[in-house]
Each structure stands twice: as structure tokens, then as C-alpha cells.
Length: 205
Image: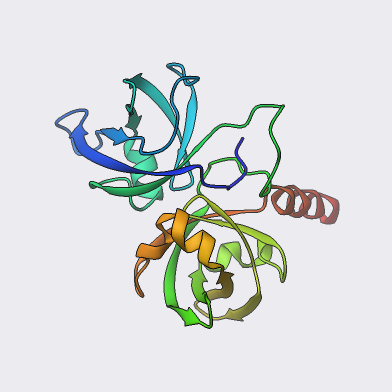
């Protein structure tokens, strides 16, 4: 489990195929940036842009993870070198600064607007229609591993547009500052909303 509070911005430094077949995954080498790795053991989980990955090797300032083809097909930003948001898995002694995050990407959104408004930035993302029922005004959503609050929602034929206000601190300490209109983002809906929807669907059947 994670909180969606980014601990550091790291960098994918290399992407190496794990096999020659079309369905082979890749191994990512990651510079951990400012993320301390002293307490990270092999087999521990680290969130990369919102996707939970397992550490398979490490040095003092870097680590590697194996990413399956299925994970590559369901995410964005994990198939090429570049910056990534990093967060280590929760311990029971830590503050829950964001919200409960599983690190399982539910879908890909498309950035439709990203521009400054006063001292902050407005981000509008188009989410897939199947995720619309999980998005609510003032509810929580994870974008590229960052826990954020939904400011508005607009259901449409092609999906659900939701807006977010990004404060300067969030822009400064995450990779969200690199977003571009038309680009894709990893989305994870609120864990509680997922279970509520399941309970309601069972009660109606």
C-alpha cells in the first residue's frame, strides 16, 4: 500500500528487454534520486508513477525492477528513459498523508488542459468511461502516483473529464510539471469507491 505522496523524483536510466519475444517484459534501471534506499530490501515494493513494482536488485543510489508485458500494456511512462515519481510502500508507523493507494493502475487518462491559474496550475484529464462512476467532486484520484483531489467532474460521451488544482509545491516535487496536452497519465481510482461499487452491484443482483 502507498499514500500517493511522492517521496522523490527518480529517473529511468535504461530499459532492457527480458526476452526476444513480442510478449517479453523489460527490466528498468532506476536512479533513485533523493529516495533513501538503506531500508529497502530485495522484494520490497516501490511505486513508479503510480505502478507498484518489485525491487530485484539495488545499489546505494539505484535499483532495478522487472516489468511484465501486461503491466507495460496497462501503463504509460515505464517503457522509456525519463523521470518518474517514486514512493516506498507504507509501514504501519507512517502518516497517511494522501489516501490509501494500491499501486494498481486502473486506466489511462489523457491530459486535455494543463496551464497556470494564478499561483497554481489547472489540470484537466479525460478518464475512460468505465472509471467515471468512481470519480466524485472532492473525491480522491491518483495521477502518475500522486494523490490528488477532484475539483470538478463532467461526464461526456467519450469519458469523464475531471479537473484538479495543483499547488506550486506539487508541481515542484513531482513529475507532473512535465505533463503535456494530449499526453497519457496513469490513473488509480479510490480504493473505497471500488469496494462500494462492488457491494452495491451485488445487492442489486
